[in-house]
Image (cartoon, rainbow, N blue to C red; front, side, top):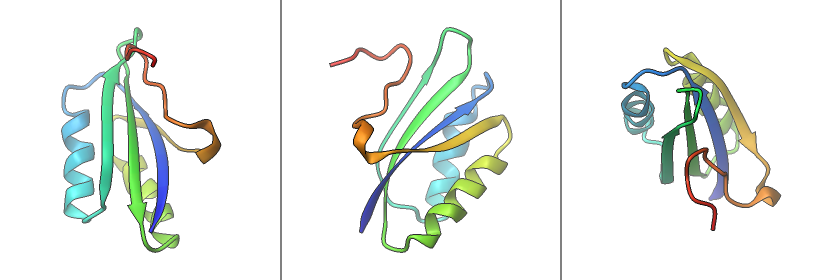
Length: 92
């Protein structure tokens, strides 16, 4: 299995974390961590760490997340950048 880091940005809607989790659960995407926070502009910043056996599945997951209502951006975070900082979360 390969670990992939994703970061998505969404508009200020209280249902964003729920929609992301529901989509990943319904598609049986193995998530090892998820962190959601609102930044100072009242937008959601969600980071995901996924373990996928098939590389082609990553593109499908990104496409499906991009289609969610209120999601404005989904991006792959390079492995070399370490953990994904989330606005408002303390940096260690």
